[in-house]
Image (cartoon, rainbow, N blue to C red; front, side, top):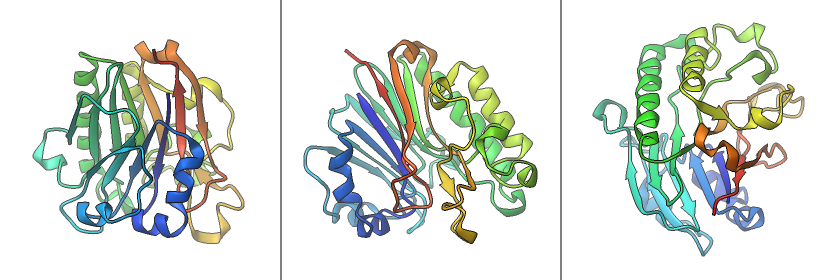
Amino acid sequence: MKLISWNVNGMRAAVGKGLMEWIPTVESDILCFQETKAQPDQLDALPWPEGYHRYVYSAVKKGYSGTAVLTRIKPLRVWNGLGLEEHDQEGRVQNLEFDAFTLVNVYTPNAQNALARLDYRLEWDAAFLKHLCALREHKPVLFCGDLNVAHQEIDLARPKENVKNPGFSPEERASFDRLIDAGFIDTFRVFEQGGGHYSWWSYRAGARARNVGWRIDYCGISASLASKLRSAFILPEVMGSDHCPVGVTLALE
């Protein structure tokens, strides 16, 4: 099974940049999108490729946040959110139960400039980890999306300059530590321990051309899926957003 996750930074903008033509070329069983920035009726009107079940979860605020999943495999059950009103207004979490695992598509809140939203972000991180652990009691978990944090210095091009910036604060990194300590696996680091591999680049100063980026998009799994993991990858050559797609393949019966 192949899964790809991509923060498209606006689904309608991505469609204008060739998203719908790209989807069939990657032959992915599941595609998870973040930051769709559209309401359900706007997403329904787009020219989706055939052969996929589609699920969308939009923010209450129009033109903001939002997630969507395309899947060739029909899920057993689909529900949205963390089950907490204070965290379920921005279309950030989709849950899809399949035979072998539960999928969580996530768009984690940004801590914002001057870490203005850091307190909320840390509350979110704690609630999200609790959610994953509760799901794991019933089935293995595969989560993917934009987690808005570079976990270690190797995960961004300029760590020293960004220590107090959103996405690389000690507090956010510690939240990701707790995710790993709880037994979840950052799949990309199973296969690649080197630097220079990023999934987001600022639009400023030609950052992408110079590969001055951050790895803030992840595919994670519970440890019980580790024996099924076959690959984890980043697709930096795919344009259309300030993020690029990331993904995994799993050998599932």
